[in-house]
Image 1 (tube, rainbow, N blue to C red):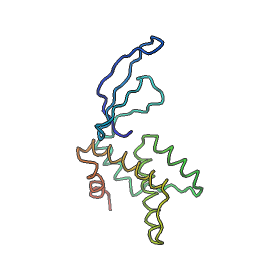
Image 2: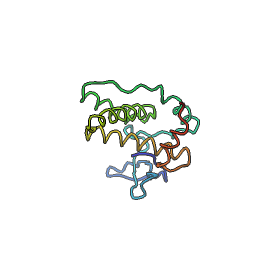
Image 3: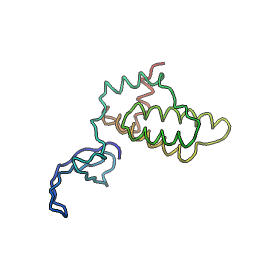
Image 4: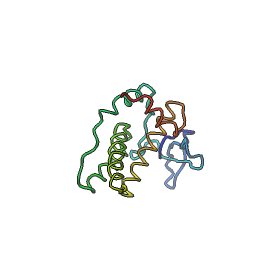
Length: 153
């Protein structure tokens, strides 16, 4: 769901009279949505956002991050989907780098990424941009230029 802020922790009684504590989450870049998830939900992956120092370290590593080399389309798609769910910024960078390079190569021969790959790249970019934006106190639209300004030559 992207970057969310915990706005409340509540307790509710459910059908079997069990009281359940849950988080009320507000996506930072979507004011029209509220998410509720039980505090003890093992399927709800939550973590603290990356720090500015961690961002600068990741940006410094970007030129050295190798693209993902999986020829089988289904295996590659499965890898990308699993990598998106890890919540690891480095994995998102690998996806973006892989698909950006593929998109660039395909454009030379007047081809495009598949819709699936385009969707995966957009999701990875959205997640990375939102998290960087919060940590850097900039808008998600400014993240790419920030990265380009700070990436080692």
